Length: 383
Image 1 (cartoon, rainbow, N blue to C red):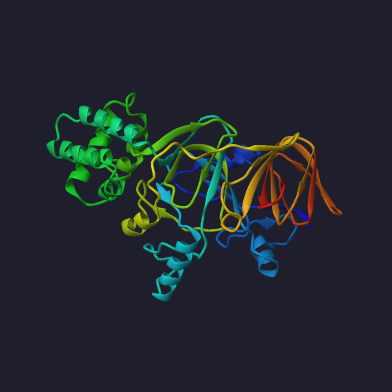
Image 2 (cartoon, rainbow, N blue to C red):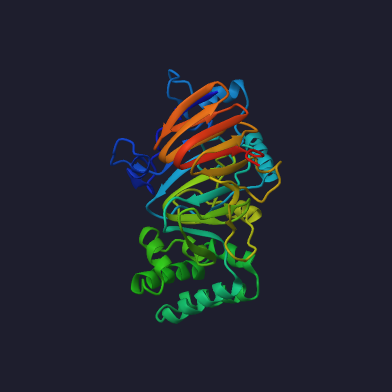
């Protein structure tokens, strides 16, 4: 099978007005567009262009579920700080909430399905901003020292900053994390202090200036200050394994992830925050951002392959810029961003121009042309 599919961009408050339609060359719109989901997820399954309303969720029910969800993302303001569970935690958490009869749409529900959600994000343009992973301890301490110097008026806030620094400097990151998200009065005063620092000196505290404008006095300001802040160039990618804290700040990107909607939040959101469950899931190991470099597997193919076991991560992502032949170990979704390609698979063929998307299920996908195309692959393909 080789057919065109499409979907409607999902609108969230953090989205970019017309951001995805503009990227794909679709009809302009002023609506905030945040994510385009490409896959069989029940919340927003892709539709067959010529299928009289048929979608990939129905196809998967008759065949097999996809091992991934492929997305286009456009962010104008910071997303929530979050982490995702590993497969064991997802299965156990889902089973527990099902047994307790927690409605799947309940605000306080943590696990909407029994699946993990490891993910990879790749910047489509220069300047994509992200928070990802816990920064080295020395870097966090340096940030807190500058914040303590900036706080000259609020004694409670200074006490909070001093306590925070002590926990971080001694390597008690788990305590510092839980304290930041607690109702402790010193923690709340410290978050307010970070908001003031960003407002009063945006040049010295650009991240706090941006976040504080949208989420003043939020506990996420403290958590964000413990994370790596980086700006990606077009084509640079991050690998976000289970438990890794992350929060995308602004820009347009493609994401590929496990077929799940399990999100545990840690600030910068009006949604439910379960500190205990997040603390059980999160990996607070400090270090450099988890970048993922592509591997050239052909003259016109770069492959982004997650550094994780096959039984935990069932996807990878290929970037194609010219003639290529991809071996498929399962369903693939091809998104043409620039140029034109003639796609063929077994007896099927179709042209793909900028903004068009195809779904392929046979053993080989051949592409002829030039431009820029991303192909979401079932793990093991294009080796």
